[in-house]
Image: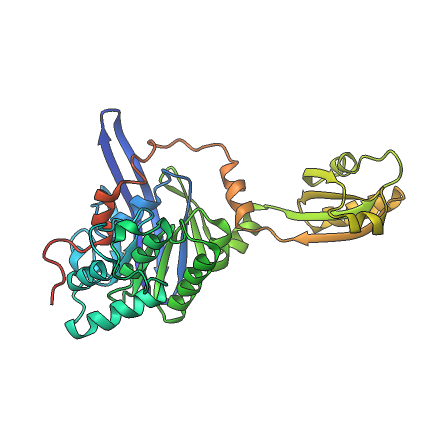
Length: 359
């Protein structure tokens, strides 16, 4: 285990409203080590954004503790924010400024040395494919361009730790891949990333570990593959079979132990149908374990079916996520208000406060 850059113990945040007290983050234990990408997953209102705000020193915990680089963000917020970068899902960018002017202003706030500001701004504008639009007002930018500008801003001061909330929202596939590559590069440089995302495929590809939040509580944490094994999410299997006349393949497999989510269809593509014959069918389902797959093949062969192919897919993060959210909801203190807050609140999370930085 490497050096810990984030550690929380029993981290809790409550909000008081007319409806009563709402516990948005509920005794969360979390750790992030140097050079690690940790994903925070969960539905809207699960507590992801509030957790990030607590770690960035924007909010003060009701109880419990948080340490970032050994510092308490609620006390040493200035020192913490000089070492972290934050990009929110709805970037708070100034439409009146050009992209270049906005980055330059933030570089000053972050305390980037004067001689370094121009080259650093140019470097990031080029890196995020904004060089041609650098001197246009941000109000004319598309959503994807604004998102890229916010990511560039989060990297201005060369932070050791980044909090990225849906960093590829609004980006096309090419830009999304570039952001994913950037995150991998940051990890390779020994930086740490906390990634809040709904994109389960992205989390599967990028995260060393994931933490799944539900109603403010941690319901699962670990490497995606290990979580899948622990949850018994099963193995997704695709059969290509020509059954005997009158045999309903989905019903036949459904009668065996250890199978679920079964469906049957014609093979995909005219070529497959011509090659395998009109009787061929594709059956997909989720097997509890490899023994269930072996038993299914044996049963199909015993019935006189011709089995052309058996393809297995190991459980992925999507299987884990839906297995978790298929459980009965545990009692909770309430939903988190304003998980996706507007720009006025988010600006506090991804910008230095008054008096911070400066040259």
